[in-house]
Amino acid sequence: MLRAAHLPPGASPALVALKLSLIPTLNLTSPSIIRKFSSFSSLHAFLPKTFLPSSPYPLSLGLKRFPPMVAQPCPRASFSSGGNTGSGREILVQHLLVKEDDLKLLLELQQRISGGVDLSDLAVEYSICPSKEEGGMLGWVRKGQMVPEFEEAAFKAPLNKVVRCKTKFGWHLLQVISEREESLLQDIQPVELHAKMQDPNFFEEVQLIDVREPEEVAQASLPGFQVLPLQQFGNWGPEITTKFDPEKDTYLMCHHGMRSLQVAKWLQTQGFKRVFNVSGGIHAYATKADPSIPTY
Image (cartoon, rainbow, N blue to C red):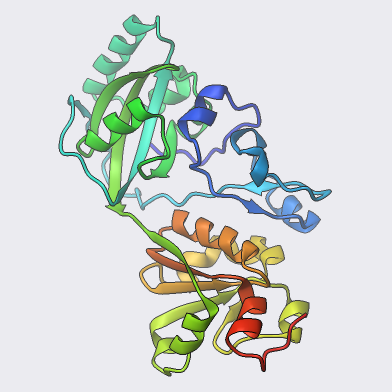
């Protein structure tokens, strides 16, 4: 059973190292957003210091979107030493962690899972990883984001097979419950975007999002971009996959390309397949591609 609880503020070193760069962040500084998302625990303990905001209202928010699980039977887990390796894909992983000297407990948990008990329920009760609050859910991961031993086991594991592995943090039981093609995130240069925008069909084939604030958009804007102010993330974030199509190419823009990059990374966690960030933002677009656009 997947759980909607969120990670606690006191993260252990194990999860920090295990999910090296797994949680993309949106540094949202508006007090109204903080109040709206007051149910989310702070994720500062999970993030490198370079990702932490310096504003008076620090908040690093990591959101994950899980595939629909309603009305689907929980897969009966079985055990395997591995399967086919794979690259260019992302996997949805849940796990539990016990201490290195708790091998007896680990074997007991394996037996209970073989008997039909869900791994996530056991994670809540027995795991020493802070992800226990989410039923052991680590979210979507790609290669290079986990410690090597865990990554090797996870990417070799067939779907729904519970795999045992050992890392420096202890013994893990992990289960890959879904997989998908790895999403694309890359910069697009302003000159290239300008050339694409000369084709009227371009606007029908893609989604264009401007994450600047309304007062910024009033000073300079590009046609076709829908404005989703980052400071209003609390309003549009929860509905992003209903208002936009994750299968379509999606272009993000802000003033200098940094805020849009944050949102672009977050969109990847929401299942968007092809995301493009306008390098240098609208400022670079005005100076390099179209001087008729005002700068500010």
